[in-house]
Image 1: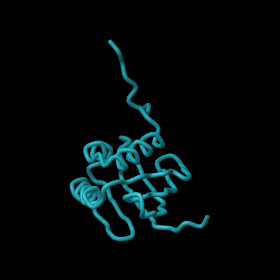
Image 2: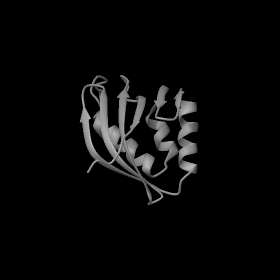
Image 3: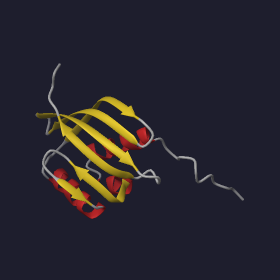
Length: 123
């Protein structure tokens, strides 16, 4: 019989964050859903929604409004339960957004919140 250590993390929060970004870029709604907690708070410069159902509806709307999403991680910072990522997001190969996502995780390593801040390219 194999005993599993429930206190050990299966993946680092950084790995989960990078997985989330890859799933988002692939417009993989089911993959994103598997990473969200039931009580997630999603906030950016335009909207604020709470709860997994509402966060997925907003994510679906974002996916349906574009043909392609390319996400380049410029930098990543982490502490115990939070990741901050500096991103260059290219929409439909023409629109560039510079964004900082601050992502928090709950004890089950599900994404508890995403706060996105719009920046600018300051080469």
